[in-house]
Image (cartoon, rainbow, N blue to C red; front, top):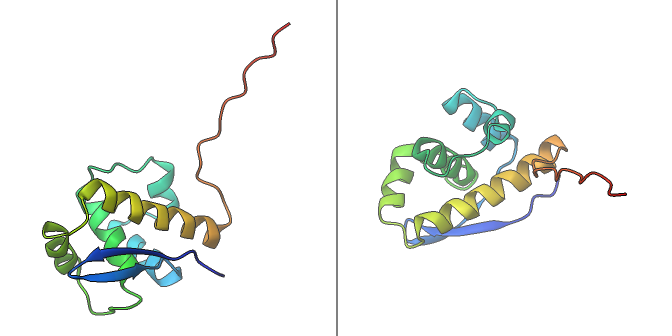
Length: 116
């Protein structure tokens, strides 16, 4: 499985986000919801707990002992504006979930009725 690379400047360093199987399992363990449940319900950018946990899990591959609390502290002092940070995190999360699970989370457009 080849995952697209995303990075964010947080904690004073440019860090790569990666959502492989271990990160997705960590999200499930912490939030008691699978990544598919999170995305299917429609991700709420104002749900700070979910944002923090998803960001934390994406950083675990390079910092195994990092805690959600440390990530929250980094978010408080983040060089990247919150809305931009969430956009990067969710893009990485969605792309990885699509790759791991092989399903699309894009909203399907409704077909317009045929006009006669």
